[in-house]
Image (cartoon, rainbow, N blue to C red):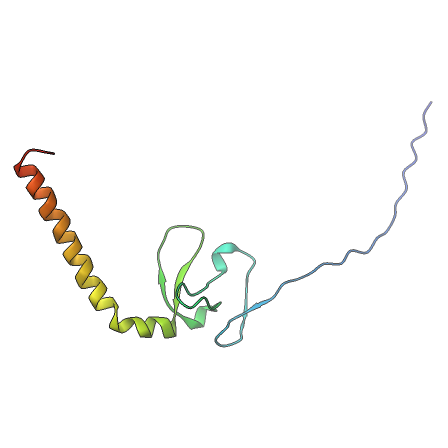
Length: 105
């Protein structure tokens, strides 16, 4: 017959807790989930919810955000980008129309 001997030992374990703070206002940011992390896609600053300038809907787990300052700088660029995107769409349509005329499609 085998005797099974079980003993208990109490150990202490050191736990490291990371804290992240907004690079603009210094507020602590909750980083428990990947989807709660917000880093400006242009300047790379870590952001709290109050310092976001804009958030681009990606439908994914990670956030695509722009800080207020970079969003403000973009005021000069966004109208031009929209204009060029419209022109690109028109060029694709012209290309497609030409292919339809020569029956490539």
